[in-house]
Length: 145
Image (cartoon, rainbow, N blue to C red; front, side):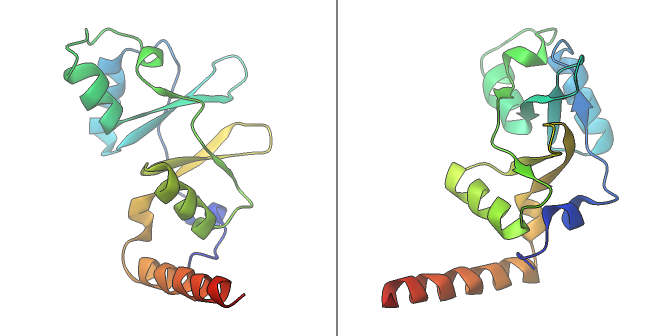
């Protein structure tokens, strides 16, 4: 259900983390090894999120531009990505992803450290049907009011 907290969606799920100086080749290999579509990039000194690197970043910014695979991930990652706290609902995260046109959203603890990633893929199945019904219901109520 979209009303579930994102923490419930990500609990017991691993996510990938890299530091900004890692090469895009190393990040891509890590993604391949674990079948992941995104890697969160955190500052090594305090562990706070500074970016996200997705398959799209690697394709558009590295491969399509002919960048050297030794390029640090910090040069191609999406900096300061939109993120949600653990107390937010999955529906809220889905809404932000839809509005922003992206598929992955970091989940952060109150100190700004990553604790996981939610993905639009998490919404497959009945969850997306229920979310659509909820949105349509809210839109209908907004029109009435």
